[in-house]
Length: 151
Image (cartoon, rainbow, N blue to C red; front, side, top):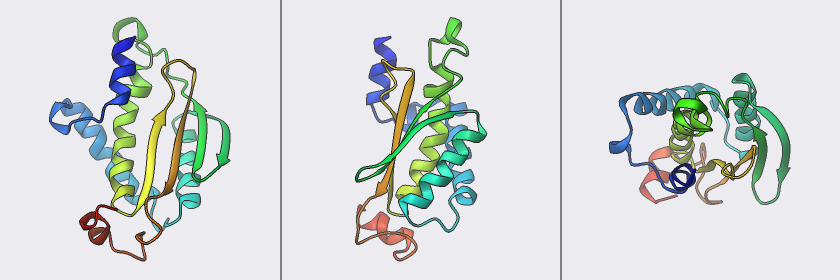
């Protein structure tokens, strides 16, 4: 149990990911190009993100907007593979790699997507989407400029 909580707190080092996990990240990054095409505001991004959650069977429990667009949800795959891999293996070891691809894509465009959090002691998780900086955002600012200025 402590391992999963610790892993959720650490940023993943791409060199430590398995080839399958790297493929999931790449898949998420490629999907993000279509999923978030033309979305330049957190409100638009979060609507599309919620659609993606629903498409893979995730139940949206609550939504809110307090400085950032927040989505509280329940992953139906929490116990899938739990007997061999531990609880939440599919939701937070594998599906998070796809989310990491979204994080990479959106970060290059000035959108701060905080992938699912708060799942260690609860059936519910939450994610947030906000603008990384009011001065730098896509499409007003090209992705290269956001990347170059640490936005």
